[in-house]
Length: 122
Image (cartoon, rainbow, N blue to C red):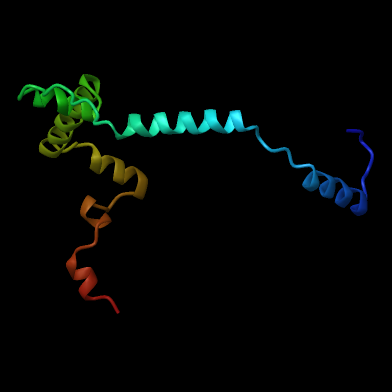
């Protein structure tokens, strides 16, 4: 097709010609398509083969497969141990960090309001 601009009447004439010249598929093609469709329908109607039963056990292997394998399990264990360690042995330098950021005279408990702060609110 050339790069010239077509007006509406030329485009409508083009579409009208396309609507009148509708090629029909041959009977041989339609028969082949119908034969393929029937073969596919019969194949899907047949019962699917049953996979062999897995032995019981191997729960850890299945769990590892679900969560991402041994690397993911190693990361999960490391994060869990770090959480327990941080919870048990709270970092002693946290007061120094808050004093540096907020200036002296503040405590860690000042950053989190207690129940009395909510009760005395307006």
